[in-house]
Image (tube, rainbow, N blue to C red; front, side):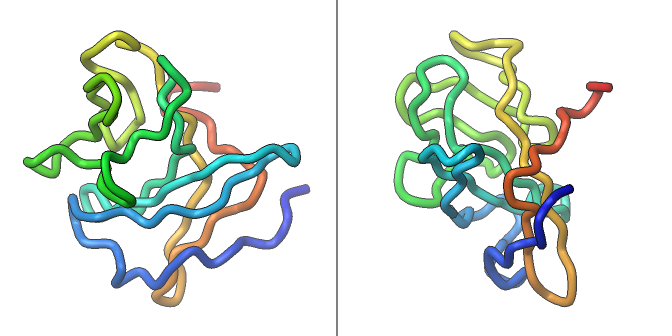
Length: 124
């Protein structure tokens, strides 16, 4: 059974295609970071780790999108990811996915379900 949702930020903190909010994400007691952004009007959260090299994606804290605000770009090697699915569409990890985190927007706040990864779209 998943624990209680955790508030990450106010919903107004996420602008469409803009700066994301980073948060601690340590499933299984490990260390790590997650991030949440707004894309196509929806809050989307992922583990902040490139599937190719295991490095964090953002080139400055909270900066995940390319200049168009349409794709995430890995700061280390330029892999390009679809924000709706986390699918890598270009670069050395093409076809891999970012690990999604279950997120919801409720009462003007963004919440995640701690230690409860969300299946990738199209899985199961």
